[in-house]
Amino acid sequence: MNETHPISIAIDGPSGAGKSTLARLATTLRFLYVDTGAIYRTIAYYAYANHLDPADEAAVLAALPNIRIELCHDAEGLQRMILNGEDVTDAIRLPQISQYASVVSAYPGVRAFLLEMQRDFARKGSVIMDGRDIGTVVLPDADVKVYLTASVETRAKRRFLELQEKGEPTDLAKIAADIEDRDYRDMHRDISPLRQAEDATLVDSSNMTIEQVVERILELCR
Image (cartoon, rainbow, N blue to C red; front, side, top):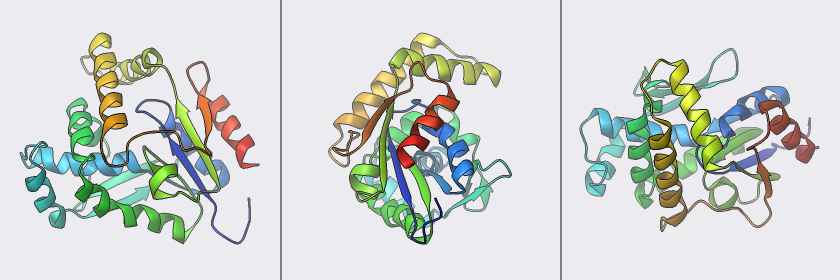
């Protein structure tokens, strides 16, 4: 994978399908890993922290000029989100931010605000970029496209275990309901809905380990 031109790998799919494990793949390939969902969550966190109603599109758009987002990566290659100089990587994973993110990410103005930022990463070097519309909108000419999914039950269990490990109170049934609600909104929004690109390879990670997912995508890259 030492071609002189940048290589782009687009990974799309619903929340909790295992896309975040792709940081490991990026480390293997020495590519930049960009989790675009975290970028949208950062905007959602700004709205939440500043007591903005996520349903108030005008208020959210008016706040965009006040938002400065930076990405950095730790020693393990994991993406850290910096909002106006503050590391908010952990804060943006709170359950309430998921619902905020699903609402604000549907606004055309928010998506336009972030589109060139995301494309710029791919112009500067080889990337693995994951999100909801990477292969369809952000990087339609990506060298490799994958639609990574998993059953609602599997995704809910994964999230349940994550929250348990953090010692946070959680309810499996509510998590599953929230995931189904998020899926519906992501797939039915007017702008850049979540869907599999026609030239993307479907990978269902329901019964796969992280290592198996990484190896499957490596096969496609080769």
